Length: 80
Image (cartoon, rainbow, N blue to C red; front, side, top):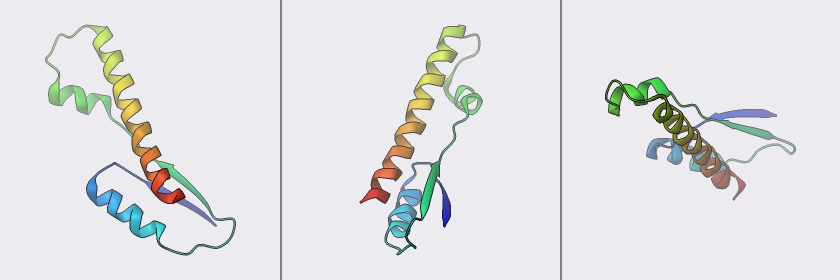
């Protein structure tokens, strides 16, 4: 069996993952965890206009790391 789990790191999502992890699955079940981030949304919400290009790159690195941490947090829950 193959299962795809999407995570956004929210409290509701973490609760869902914990409940999901309590289930019994068939042997050899594979779970893939995905998350996504949107740089444009983040930039519209907090960034003033006219920022230098380097700032955009730093925001992208930050959001990518945050997404990776979100996925790893879900994976940790599922491994337990």
